[in-house]
Amino acid sequence: MANPKTEPVRAIAQSIWLDFSVVFCVFLVYAVYMVPSVNEPHYWTKAAHFWDPGFGKGDLFLESGDAHWLFFATFGYLTQWIEISQAVWTGRFLVWIGLASSWTFLARSLWVVDRNSGPVHQYMPMTGTVWGIIWLCGMHWGHWAGEWVIGGCESKGVAYAFLFLGLAMAIRRQWTYAWTFLGFASAFHVVTGIWVILCVACVSFFLDFAAAEPRQLGIANPWTMRFRRWIGTNRNGWLLCMIGVLIGAFPALLIDWNATPSVASESAVKQAYLRLGHHLVPTRFSPERWRWFGAELLIALFLVVAIAFSKPSKKAGQVDVEVSKYLPNLFWSMAMDWQHAFRSFPRGIQFIFGCGLFAFAIAMIGLTIDLVFSTQRPEIAAKILRFYWFRWNDVAMPMMIGAVAIAFGSGWIVHQTKPKRMQWLVWIAILCPGSLLLYVRLDGALRETIPAGDKAHLIVKTDTPEDQQKHYRDWVAVCQWIKENTDKEGLWLTPRRQQSFKWHTGRAELACWKDAPQNAVALVEWGSRLANAYQYNEQKILQPWTEQKLLDLRNQYGIRYVLLDRRVLRQSPLLLPMLYPTNDDSNSTFAVFEFQDSKSTPANNLPTKP
Image 1 (tube, helix red, strand yellow):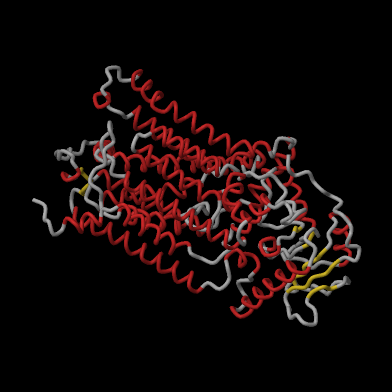
Image 2 (image 1 turned 180 degrees about the horizontal axis):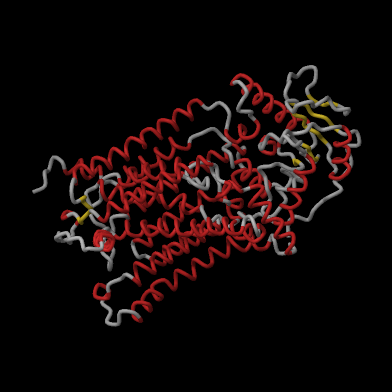
């Protein structure tokens, strides 16, 4: 008989609103860093230019194709009403609310157990919070390709909010809604969406067709009827999903419509090996990432093996059966026990487990492509690897680990030998790293004095904290002066060590390392400009600009202004009129110069948009 004193407490603990609130707070603590974050200047300057072509007019990156046009068309509209930093904060909260609500709904779906009608079993209290903490730990420390979900405001954050809803609906067998949400995700970020669409299709095929039991489905013919039923259930959703995919893919295809095969190959090589190798090419991932990913893989393997030594819990609504005796073939016996335990999982945990296996398999295919082709045929490997084969693995593997850990920790499945000890170990493994992660992130946010979007490249790590603060103050000061005192349409040659010039000034620059265009023609030109404007010696030391070099760049590109970084070794003052700093200003890090013939126009004005 239920205890009336504990029922209200239990009802509150199982409330989806409480779970959502705590999940949102966890996401907030994890991501509430200063604006801009690393990618926000890249995304939001393009969003501002989308609605105001005068913002950064003449900039190669801003005037290149808009691959993520739906994000710019929706979230970018905020820049027409409020300052860009305020627009980013507004967008962040909207994305975090979307991610927290969709994640909580997905977590509640983990406990769907019935294969036919999909009712939800009794929830483990605060599933979204517990699962979310495990997932964040895996994403933070175990990411292999540098993927993240909870952070700044950009298009993939919106896409993941829809993807989580799509996964939840797929678990609940509400396929029209599932495919529609997956289509919405692809409309915002087509590469992210397509991998999850393929994942859901494969996992659904296995669970709902290949491994489905005909008696539970009420079907006489075990193959043809099951296949027809599977196709019929998904057909309408597939059509709606395809519309979303086309909305996201069409702009990306259109911007490369006029690119020749040679330009397309060169663009793919620059993208995969020059600009985004740390995301796309495993042999270029840092050793630290490989070590952490190896540790995450060992944890996943441990949990997978532990399933074979477990049995369904009686309280999970399963029939307790005698554990089978091991056959002479130990591995075959373990496989049978593993299959028995896996079938006892709720459908939601089965589905997430399948997503993790699919994502890992795709990542291993990508690794094989890199190992086989990158050294011999890099142009072929680059065209394949540029589709982010490892992104979904960084997200799905921690989700799988968390789902299986919750199954053990909640007692849904019980270890055969020491069930209580296994549960305690699981909860310690969950709470200790999770508490440490949230403490470290909150402490980092409170101590942060330079935004990550400004700190990246601009700040030299070997400098003292005092020098770093001074360089940042000088950077903000010179950008503010430029915004208030220079022509909006002049083309700027900016320092190599920065990525937030357009964010602070709204002015066009010759090239920026962070701002690689999306379309092939502009990307090739971007690479050429970087190589031409920023040259290094054999020791990889950036060389100073000379007057002759500046004249050559001005004659080739029509540069009007030069923003000089005095930290570059052996950089002498330029023989050009210096506009800043003036007698009333103090800035020992940066200086602004202008060519006397300021009415010249760029000699190389690429038609970067189709």
